[in-house]
Image 1 (spheres, helix red, strand yellow):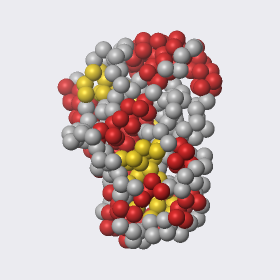
Image 2: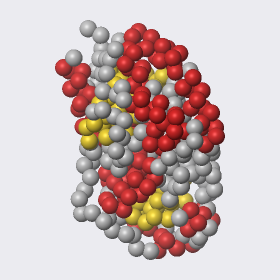
Image 3: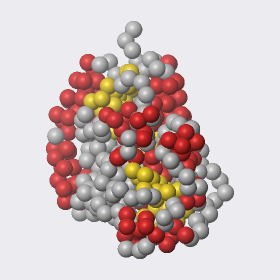
Length: 367
């Protein structure tokens, strides 16, 4: 009998979608190592490998564009629209090429986060398409008006062919999807003992004075690192390869200390930190919420998912919300202020990756 094969299609936008899809893929592999994983994404292999410890096939393909950005906050709508039209015009050849690949490789199920064309691809291949997300791209584009409205309608049509949506917390209604299952937060678990990491990297500051700076795969163009001088007894941690060499900044990308650890990720450092500073991003927020690490977030204008995410951390996390001016132009006095408590006493379900993984394994075992 052929090996059960899962085709995982991931949005071509930043690192967040790749992180959460890979965290689900890693959970699937732990539950059932026999399932062959095909990760279809332009995200770098090293990122996927930091969540999937076993073998997988990496197929670099882009079926959508997400948003064209110069960094994690600045969007180029004109280029985004141009690339979306190009993908829509090429959809027949994209679908035909992938259907051929799916049939050749005897794929049994498509799981997508959340390129719209994944559903028509699966439909044309005669296999189910399941998706996972807290928002659809139709929701993002529709708000921008003009020609984006027509693109959003095309995307909603694609999503209508999805057989099952795993809707993650901090969501928009996602009304284009005919069959919705609500699940908990996705994300990776810290891989190492925090005392081992603290000792290896010489982190002496207490958690309340240890801060993780993380702005997703695209980063920020100009992080005001000069503000770190106001906090000499604090420890800041960054994965920004462009970060300067400062006495109280541990730059994971530019240090040799981590050689005894395999593929360190922001989530591996979160348990050491009294807060993380980020921009609105589901994967970072979800991993922090799973570990109950306080979140300090910038606001982000013009991206419809951002208010949902910010409402989510106000409801479920200790938090601070910063304007871009406070972050870029201030002296970071906000670090000396008290965090706001969560508005709700309820906790979010933290087992989304595991729930989706179990559903996929059950599907293969019953088919």
